[in-house]
Length: 206
Length: 187
Image 1: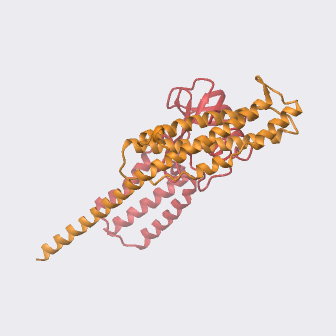
Image 2: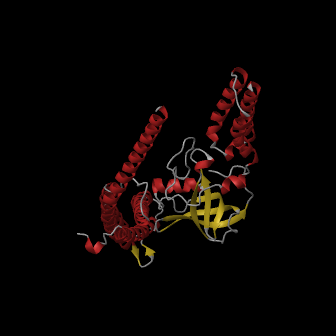
Image 3: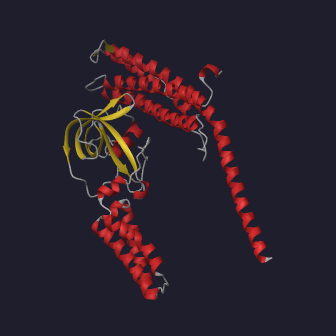
């Protein structure tokens, strides 16, 4: 029994470590959380070495079930777990977020979340005309979306931005859109000049 | 005897928990029922303030444009538009939006109240955007005053205020109707 408990702790520690090293952790949590995974792995190694835990096979299976989920999860599958309802207001800031180039007065390679956060911070008039390039999923003929997580994949929510210009690829496809931001009424949209299909990125979450 | 006591104790705990839960749900429902109409009315006042801001921004646009052509090389036109833009007061709208006191969402509520709450939240976000756009237009036009000017920011801010205030007014109207306080009956 004691060996069984130690084995479970060791497998969990290994799973946490491998998840961080292979980048698979990004399918479950935000990148800054990797440190927490590594600390957990270290603590579990200590547990495996020093603690004599009495675990029944059923309890062991229950503890290891999330590991099985983590192993079988793919970027596409993780992205499908997102809630259908799009956020009306994007989270203003999250732990581990870098500076937003749009708020700093620049453009370039940005995310849909950064566009929405900049819109909430400075409005659409100041953003109009900024050149942008975004990777996103097609949500409609002229709508782009991404899944945003604040902590973990379990809290994933959709954020969406409208596109003006060429009709996008079929719904669910990943695209890279280049163009500039435009203000239409009280909405900020991406006036696209080019739209190219891309493959699903390793980390589908923002 | 011991089994009876345990049963009584268990029933007492469950009953107390159920009573506490019922009271909490009831209190939050009553709070929402009383608070939402006030919030909807405050939101309506804010949308009316947004209408005043729209009129001011329209004036700035009209000062700068002749037809569809911006008079960016006409010093008098530019100075007039800038003065008008600076006079467009966003503080009143900010104050009106800050006054909106949306009660906490009740655990159990009906579809009408849920939709009315959604209308207020959506409309409030829209009006906050209108304020940002009006300030953004002023900032953009001030930055351009010594360099290459164009009147795009002024037009965009006016369009934002116009569509935002119209949409917010419609949402406030709908929210009040959903809550059983249509505007015709509000003082």
